[in-house]
Image (cartoon, rainbow, N blue to C red):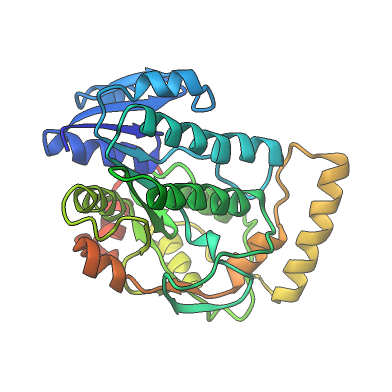
Length: 331
């Protein structure tokens, strides 16, 4: 791996991938909607444009041997056309650009949501089938995109792909999960959902970035990861609400005192979705059916396959990750 390109390299996970690539002396390009001084300071070059512009993407991939496709529209609310355009058509453009420029390896950032079917998952593995019924456009679009990536591996000799499925990525610089939890906690807008016994995987961001690099190294060497998907996490699930309680305590956020049954939260999500579709389609509801399931159900996965094929190890423990997170003042 000599010259890599990271789509979404200015984002949370992408920027950590860039950092690790540069630390290993890999020339790095970042494709995104803006230029990012932080990654440019590390020696990466920013290519500013739209991932949905096929010509721009194809031109950007010239001379690249490895692509990390991290860019995506995330979230639980929004228009299907936006999720489809960015997550599916954007991925189609990435694949086409890889083929045109004879890129050898493509590592795709996926999500465990592609297999989440609304039921508890304990120690799930990569044999789980894709979900078929979706409560948010993000999950549906990521299933479509992951399938495109992995199917193209089987169809093209000399072009190898794999998908990394990190669960609940967190750490210093997180602009999504941790700040959102803390904001709702400080406003006392967060309620515990269900019986509070659900176990979930979490993934410290540096471990997630390293998993991507390990996948790329595998694709250009043994190739055992070719056409495969991998769950990535800390390897030990946490009780979701105990973990949030600890986070709040360490960040001096008031403890969550209210709790609602899952059925109540799910029904409230359905009602709020219907109301927002009619009266406030551009504003995300405070509760959705998908969010209710995520907050009340167990969803944790085995990392044995990643350990075996990629040599993945949890270098930064959850305890150390929490210490690093709580030493920062940006969350």
